[in-house]
Each structure stands twice: as C-alpha cells, then as structure tokens.
Image (tube, rainbow, N blue to C red):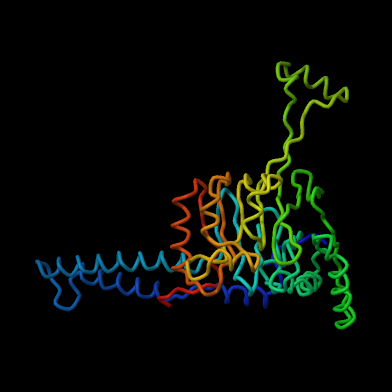
Length: 362
C-alpha cells in the first residue's frame, strides 16, 4: 500500500498531533481585546470618550500597545515554530544533545536518525541512522511498528555496516517479545557506496568522527546534462543520435542535503567530505556554544564546539547551515546568540533547530 500522509491517519492520531502542536491562544485574545478597545475609542463609546486631545492620546497609546502586541505575537510564533525552511527545503525535527535526535526532510521522504520514534517521522519511507547511541536509534522498533500499524509500506533503513547484525538482532528481540512482525528493509550502506532512492535522487555516506562508529549522509539530486562534444548540434541531430542509442548526456550528482549526526570537527578537514561541505543545506551538530565547556571537552565526547565551526569557516560552501544537537544546558536565547555570532563568520545562511528548548522568559 502506498505511503499516506499522517493527516490521513485515523482521527485520534490527528487530534493528538494537533493538540501537541497547537500554540497558545493568549496572544490572540489580548490582541482582540486591544482592537475592541481601539474600536470603542474611535466610535466615542469608550470611558471618557468623545473627540478632542484626550481621545487622540488614548488612540496613540493603544496604537503603540497593539504594535507591541503584534511584535510579541510574531516572536512567540517564531519560538514555537517546530522547523525551519531553507533553500526550498522544509526541515522538521527535534535534536537535543543526549536526549533525542530525529530530523526529517519531507520533500525528500527521508528522516535522519530516529530518536525516540516521534510521530512526525513515521511517514518518511527512508531512514538514515548515523550511529547506535540510543538518543539516535532508540525509537527504531517503534518507528517500524507504527508504520505497520497504519499499513504503511516497510521502511528502508540505512545503517553503518558494522552495526547491521546488532540492529537485526535488536529487531528480532522485539519481534519475539511483542509477537509483531516488524517489516523492514535493512541496508548496510558503506563509505563509497551509492543507493538510489528514486531515479532522480541518490544517497551516499561520508565519514564522521564520534566516540563509536558513525557516518553522515549526503542526498544528491541526479541531473543529466548534454555532453560538451554535442553542444554544437541542432535539436534534430541530437534527437537522431538519441534514437540511435548513442549516450548523449552525462549524469551529474548535485549534493542537496547533508546530515552529519554526532561528530567532532575532524570531518570538516577530510577532503573526501567535500560534498557535505558544498551541499545546498548542511545539517550539523553544535553541541557546545560557550566558554563554560571548552573544545577539549567537546572533542573528548565526540562533539563539536561552536568555536570550531567558526575556526574552520572558510571550508563551508553551503547555501545554508542548520545547527542541531545543542546541549540542554542552553536556552533559546543562548542558541540565538550563537547563531548570530556564527553568522558573522559565514557566508552561508545559519539557522537552528530549536524544538525542545525553552526560553529564559517563559
């Protein structure tokens, strides 16, 4: 059965998802109250109403209050936003260091890591696991089981080859315990190998450096370009050559989205990772942001410090960089300050995935 949208799943699931995502209505209510007061003043029905300087002064105050409320509403909407949009890609997910990482790119039908098996990832047919730490792979059985529950086709799950047997054993244990047939296509995708997701999209892993075996992934669009030696030919000539079976085009891979998972900054200096650093969008970690945790500590635990990204800024050729996997010691304000600081060093647009983090003012 073809994969269907989460919004077409049974109504209890839709309701739960909607309730979890629904923003507070308080700002809207306050704005409506201010609008009603302004309307009352303008029609002369407010207390102390009527024309004259007093009414005008009150209108001015209300105008300023409404402008402040609108600014608050926009800021709150940004705080509560679950994902980001960069370079034509909507990127959703949660990535809190040590707790859970799962990032999806719905237009590519892919998820990177599976965290605790969140509902927003269930509809993605292709799942790329970077390494075996539980905050990145723990939800795999639930993800597979949930897809089966809603009659979605078995997912294709990619793992580093060194953990494939262990992942299969893990799934077998859950099959025995739950008496559920967890259907899955498990693929050990090694460095240097290419997997065709569809005829215009392929995936390749690249080397990362964590405390256990790990790898990142690049998703490429596949395009065909007329070979240079035929560029001078007319359309009818090209058509005849094509009909005769002559290969007239070159296949070119364009790196679209790269995902590192957990890694030290060593991946940046590896020349074989050039495609990750020139992908249109790079989704990478920045676990530590300030001077309270130094670079040595970050490296010891297999992670990156913001200062290392700044130090190696000249190597990034991405159109946009999405930062993830911040330590939960940080607030939204800390993350925004870090993004602002990094943006001054990079030509790439820098954004952060902040689902799961709280503001100091909430």
